[in-house]
Image (tube, rainbow, N blue to C red):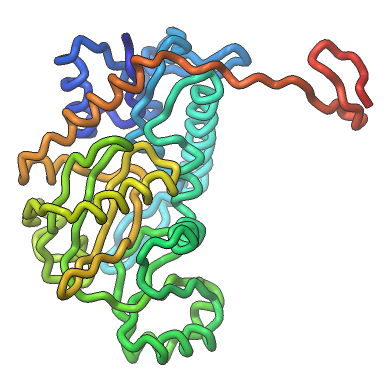
Length: 340
């Protein structure tokens, strides 16, 4: 049996997972499309995909660690960021590589492979307004939320809910509390929409799980509104405290995973006084190596076991296309018989 790992060669999550699979007698195939060598060349064909000249059609499951989005290449100049002189060339190259990686993963899935996680769920999950509204419509306990580019509605929401936070629609920045200075420049959201939520004070909890098992639940000790901005977090000094979740909250996490379409996730919760839980977000490709190191939770081992169970079912039936439309608008069968 072989299992694929799609990510970066030096990513500690990929390295650990490959080792855990090897302990189970499973060969892992690490697919890093960013490396420039013959053994990392990839191709997409009508009958499947190849990597390093080898077909991947017999691999039933792939762990998708990361699909890097293309961004302009910048560098720091003092307190400001500046584009490199050749930024457009570099950006277009990374854009083409990103498009190829997305098509590569979609081709694997169309061929019957199971992705952890499915790519389309990640692409949709990155659209935080859609993801957030899906969870709200699903009845999950999210904080009161407004996603808007309308300054008037934003001010009304803030006046109604008092202490309020804001965060970017596509991620990439810390959650911040709305301040008086923010209110003075609220008109800027006309060109840059934001997500507003009522501020919930309490403990940050990260739940790491697959569709059939909770692998870790821990409180992330923080002195900041967003734990990613807390003292020591970026330098590896975060403190993780294992926590036992009530059964109804465990079931809520599994339900949120299913609603998101994920097979694996890191779910962020907020526990406020006295014992109220709020769901904040389901992460598509959560980092967990540091949590594993600090808590001793066997997250990598759990993922390896899950992938092994998933792969044991074999490759699913490939998707079939029964018809298509020619350029003249005629509806044709696969054999070319005219149907319209």
